[in-house]
Length: 487
Image 1 (cartoon, rainbow, N blue to C red):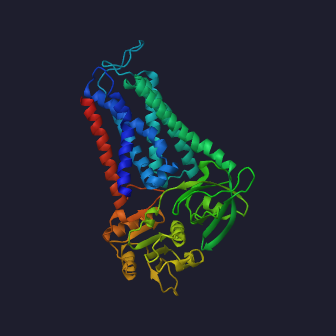
Image 2: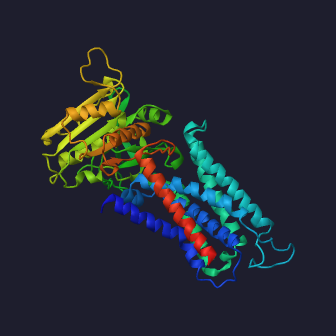
Image 3: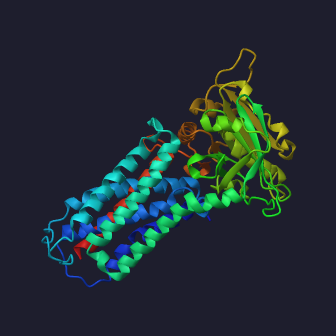
């Protein structure tokens, strides 16, 4: 199915889930309240339901990321979190009815708002915690917090928001007094708690029983290392192939299987039924990656994967030029896809394939001929771009911007507007390349990329499309809530 159609269907399903408690509430025969009060309740229900659904779109759902791509999952997670904060922040200011009298029990109905001291406190604490949680997430790239500290605080605050919000919703909300609406909140909270338990308790326990071991670790170019891992062979846990697709990624964990100490890396090998080994290319740029370079053969390592669906459109039969544009260690998923193509019996070997790699220095360029059977490709071209060349360098010089890409694509005789592009590398580099291709008239539908980090303040075609889609979706939710509140 075309990715745009699938994304649209998935978004409609997601919006349907968001609206589900409101749909249930429409079947109730309750006395009417003033429009602002009804709208406040509906907006609060949407906001809290988004929060509970956030647990299922955290990026650690293998099936969702494989079908929809990690971009769709994480962007939905991040953009709708903003909507939840906005709706929950607005809703208490819309109430016009007085609170019920203190000291007597009166169910929240058409004459009073059903707040008491307990539900007021849990509502305020949940909202304050949610604002802090989202604020820390938005500023994480510039934060002084260690990644592990931020990750732990994010999980704990998310759990606190869910529990406090559940208490507030079920004790203060008039609609939540109905058995069907209350049942929905109980089921939704159970799924949220189960997802936390699965990620932080159950899955790590399973992974601790099935560790991988380091087979080899070697430097393949300047500061870039190839890590090869395999499962330990034992009578209780025999080695078996990890079922993955070329272009996917996995979370690697050193020393312990818990998710606070993990980082995502693209798989550089391709699926092979006769081989259980997995290969990764890792650049030594931080604490975690430095620990990887210090591993020794036989050391245990834990893996959570596979995730994502980068490059799956590469195997379509449509006759188009294929262009890989990669920056630095972003060569890993491209290497996986090239290996898969070289071993495929159905791939049209006469397709034109252009690989454009950007590196700071020549020593970072990886020798692909030792890793991939390039003879399989009849029309193959590798264009190497160096940002800081030495005097003897005679190849392309520059960075992966509009001018450089336009020049090298024309020199390779690529059909620029009709080619299919696969872009991988750091988030900033992907943004720059997509902007460059957009200026050259390449539709976004012909650009395949995946990022682990998003900055929606950056102006690029993908951010623009995602923001517009989220705005339309949010407007639809608010419009339906307004319509039902006016009935």
